[in-house]
Structure formats: structure tokens, C-alpha cells
Amino acid sequence: MDSTQPLPDVDEERMLRLPPHGTTVTANDLRARIVEAADIEDAIEIDASQVESVGQAVLQLLVAARADAEASGQPFTILNPSHAFVDRVTRCQLAGAIGLETGDAQ
Image 1 (tube, rainbow, N blue to C red):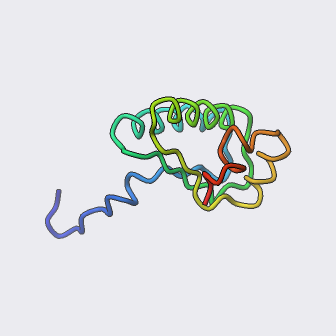
Image 2 (spheres, rainbow, N blue to C red; image 1 turned 60 degrees about the vertical axis):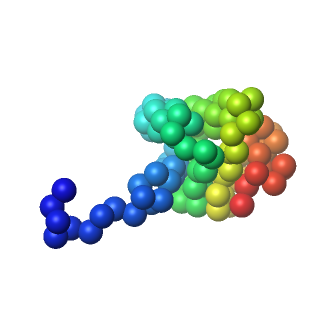
């Protein structure tokens, strides 16, 4: 790394952020990042603050990731869920499965 450039903020680098438009195309990258986080992090924290729309593939990944984390005793938290994210999750009746009803969202 060039010594004149600042080191990246580790927390920023590791933070999982949902894209503004979570589609089937973006789901594969998200899946890989969730698997990596589950392997190297103590807790999985996903920032949903920028979400404008979220599709079925991303929702399925989040449900599966939370279930896997819960089964292994690993904390799973949705951070700063946007209104659009909360609305979509609630209308799909997935709030409990993703952790919005249980307080796993901040």
C-alpha cells in the first residue's frame, strides 16, 4: 500500500451495506459478502439505510442469513433500516424472519 494514502477505515471496509436497489443481480455479491462476514466476524451487521427497493432474492438471502446466524449463536442485526426497507419487509410478512419485530434492527 502506498504510504501516502490513508489506511482504510476497517469498520467501513467490513460493514455490509445493502445497495439502494437490491435485485437478483446484486444478490449474488451480497451472498458472498454475507458468507465471508459469517466466517470472519463475531456478529453480522447489515446497514439497510440506503435501501430504496429490495427484491425477493435479497429478502431470501437475509432470511437465510439470519436463520444461519441464529442457529450458530452469532448476532445478526439490521442497522438503520430505511422506510422503504421496513415497508417492503413488513408487506412481505418477513419482519420476524429478518429481525425487525424482535428488536434485531436498530
